[in-house]
Image (cartoon, rainbow, N blue to C red; front, side):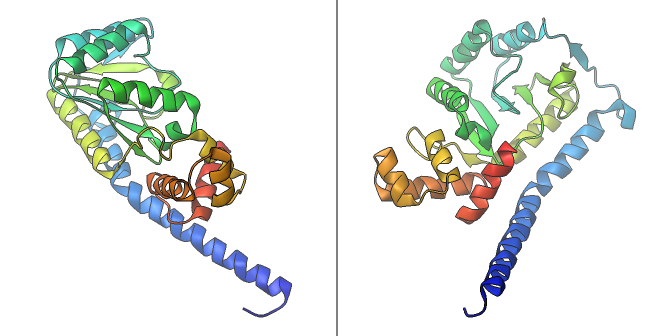
Length: 258
């Protein structure tokens, strides 16, 4: 490519802008099904939009853990967890964690969909490791917009408002509503990517080095691993975040922190 420095810089910017445009379109297309399903689910469960009485029972912060604990103990079948954050929630107390582990030990399957940001924090990595060891089947999406848990075909504990952690949780037992949340989770599960195993691309140190702009060779020396390992981890991280290039990956990671 020939031309003045200004012309070259302009050409590079055009290429980068085109990459950003295509990536945004790709992410929008990938989330379209989930957004439409979320809209329909909200409409079906919102009385203000004409839904019939669903028997939603508001749960205070004080009683939510005990309700979750009871559902884990008494219900049967798969537990489906759709996670907005691992920083807070109704099932983090030791009693509920024990009930959750006991349930998996007796053979009831548990699946969870997490936002990809859990791969980039120490807390998130520890959370994934603990529950993977307990038997949880885990996948990730670039982002999640709400939080709920489906307990077999018995009940759902969900955010009272779709994306509002401060609005508290509700207990839903209507069979149709339980099926709707189950269908939404299963759709998200099909779109999600498996969580990397220990020592793969979820290492927060790798993310930090990528954000510093280091080349693969330098990252490999710093982490004490092979160049091939670094490239495999970067490729996996790109797949998890739904991007095709290192530039796009950097943009997604930077956007997440802004």
